[in-house]
Image 1 (cartoon, rainbow, N blue to C red):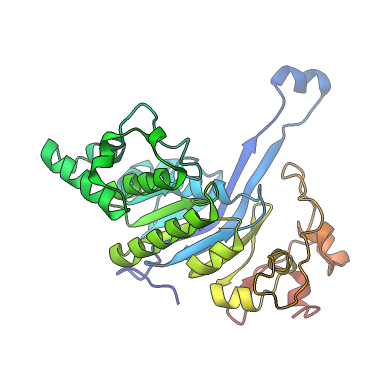
Image 2: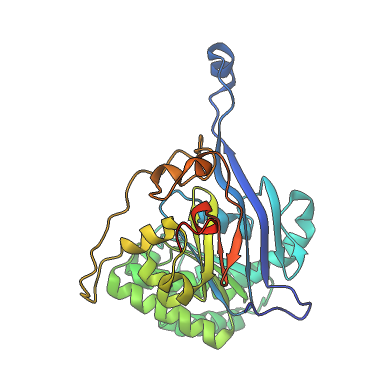
Length: 338
């Protein structure tokens, strides 16, 4: 059950969220070649809720819109349509700029690439201290230095590391610096955009354990973006599966992994290597993801789906809740698969 705030609303609520990117040819090309405008439908009408203290993970193949959702929530992109509410306050549309400005400091983002997300010309202490200056927590240099040292200690680094530059650290250490910088703004909600994908497997485990420990100690809420289902299984409270800009299935983690309903979710899980050597055959993900500029009609997954019928090719499946699982699939609703 989703934990709610004092007003009875989830911490974060997303409804009908849409983001289209204009990728049209230049005006003169369109004029002389009689071309129409072209749009990438990166996010196409998704909705979900995240309760306080939860970890909600979004998974799917590259290009399905996961990172776009992350950037929409923290305000790096403006939605084309739809609603984003934080503690019941609308922060998505352009006209909600004042409320967004008031709420967004309570959110921070950890980016995928620790090599690119840190300013190479700044010392680590200055990088971590930046949110403290921006939010006006303190102007006392001694207090700021003490706070920076405490943040570095929380993420497993030495306060003395603040005098070094980012290039002097390993990838895992740089991601720890990114986490310290995010915590400096005293957020309650962290958007984690594939925070371990650029790291070695052993370092991934260290970062994930650190994030879990910080969540338990500080009461943080996470939106976790990943394509690694093994990682998602260990960190998530709930999981949503995205395909071509849409959520096709979402449920609590245990239910989704033990009894996936949507054919796409089953395909992703079947592709996971059998590390426990149970004899299960690994089935590679079949087919190619269609272009988001011109997605298939009906259910976008139907060209790759082994259970598709004529209805799937022309009718968009509605979201149905079946045994606590939200799923958008005609084959499931028609009981052709269970």
